[in-house]
Length: 113
Length: 112
Image 1 (cartoon, one colour):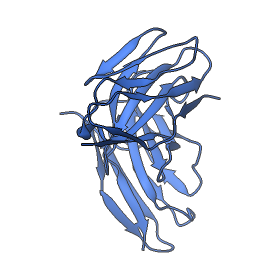
Image 2 (tube, one colour; image 1 turned 135 degrees about the vertical axis):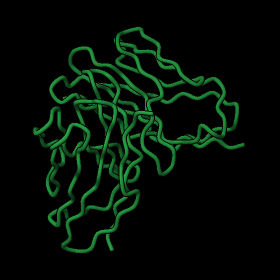
Image 3 (cartoon, rainbow over the protein chains, first blue to last red; image 1 turned 180 degrees about the vertical axis):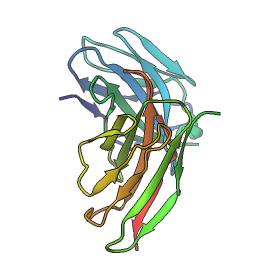
């Protein structure tokens, strides 16, 4: 079945540092890939997406490239802010029957001033 | 603005009691989902529905029940058979296959 593996957290960075959160996946066919962000006590918000190989999703300074050859979708940001502190989830949508997402376990990011 | 509304935000359950979590969407989405989130873990699928009057079990359906009488509504009942119900519950919806899901703000359920 489908699966998503994320790097374990927490990831602690200083403000303006470079961020990478690794995500790799196992899936049949050609899934779409997503990054979601969850702030404390809230639901998930879509951060960015990519629907085919070599697509780059971007939003609010975050980027991720769909790499089919390495089955990866790593999240990057060049300069993090304190307001970026949250939990980040990588997910894929490849289950055409359920249309459900398969989520990674989440990575908590803590940005210190 | 279109979105998903979950209520209540916090809910407490007594032993032997059933409780119902509400989920309403005005996005005109066909498919709706319920997920459970435990601390430090990802989301696990409880139930899903792709059309009115039809729903299927997800990966952890035991102790839960749902109904889908209207397109906009997908309530989740946590029954007394669910022995470890303390968690954060998230409702989501989507339109087309491979499109992102939209999430509500969640309901936190605790045991009294």
